[in-house]
Length: 367
Image (tube, rainbow, N blue to C red; front, top):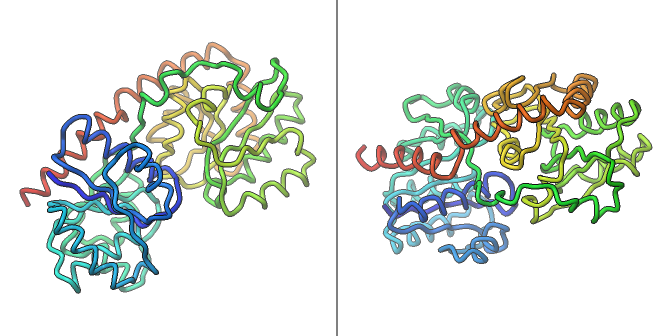
């Protein structure tokens, strides 16, 4: 099996990490003879793939309708002798379909879908999702499948594999005081944190409102927001309007999440529409208790009152109540941490998810 992982994404988010995880799972378990990541030259995944000595080819493109690159992509696939192309974002999806339609690319396509988002009514968007050359659509959770069913004619193409976590990346998952030292936080203060892009779906407004409520209740804690994104400045201004600029700490994007996450006493996840929430699984890997929203596919990875607590979307009082109850109950924390780790190891390791994807790709090869 010779695989091309194709993405036109330039940012580094959960799906880009997933590409690396799949590549390395297939390599380490000898599931594929060879693999190639095709991605933009100026992307984070290109830099990370290079740093990890993965087989990667960079490209430049003007838009998802760049016919010149669509033509070139066919040559890349032919030269690599790929027998399956995995498309990992919307723009690569468009470019691959254009390459097939206009330039005769004849390699089975497999689409990965990690968003709970309707395809919409645009003619070409509906066409590209139903394009005959796409043999399977691999979804990260059942809610993703359900939303796609509204637009995909052949439901047999849809399959669920779940989220993947590189558990080896979190082997040293013990508290060391790393964040307390860096940000000069008193040792008796708890850390309540979140790791996510600053975008609308993550609902940082509810997160800040929850922090405000907990602060008013006298909880001795500091509140960490790790990440960057288009709404970062907007949320900083909101924090300032609440008078919480000394309580909420913005760290920006960090490459040391595996060191930061174990320092959290509680992971607070207020996203209002999430396919799964892979960072919840990473919290399990770091023995960090979780309070998350009952939204999208989150309940597929966080079992309420078993691996964590679920709160009502947008309800900061409910979030604060759940967070306060959990952070003050060591017995509950220990129960959730044990159950969360067991859930992760049973469902979401690189070997488990890699094997599921391998089975799907083997189906494609015999279609």
